[in-house]
Image (tube, rainbow, N blue to C red; front, side):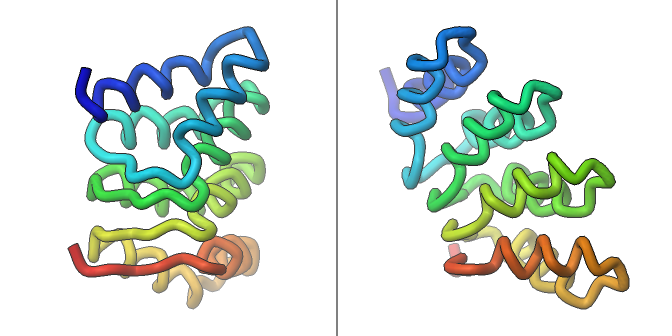
Length: 135
């Protein structure tokens, strides 16, 4: 099984009703390089109404290297959500990450000048320890 397929399998385990399995999957993904469909699937889980799933997805993403451009952009756009839980999960997920997708990195930095103070704060929090790298 490829690394990407293993990541997709781990991401699906974040939806498990078993908290031990969910936490093990989040821990296995935490700080790794996440790409392709696994990255997109993980970012979409941040929108879950289930706070435990949302937190597991945010923890799995935190400190990761996000190499999939569409997933990185989707994650950054979630900072603009009117839902404070989603906005905070996205900021937490971005903190300490490495973003290798130029447009997503630019979008994140431009959010610092938003007229919305909550968005500015979320972007500032997300940028703590975040590395913006050229792919």
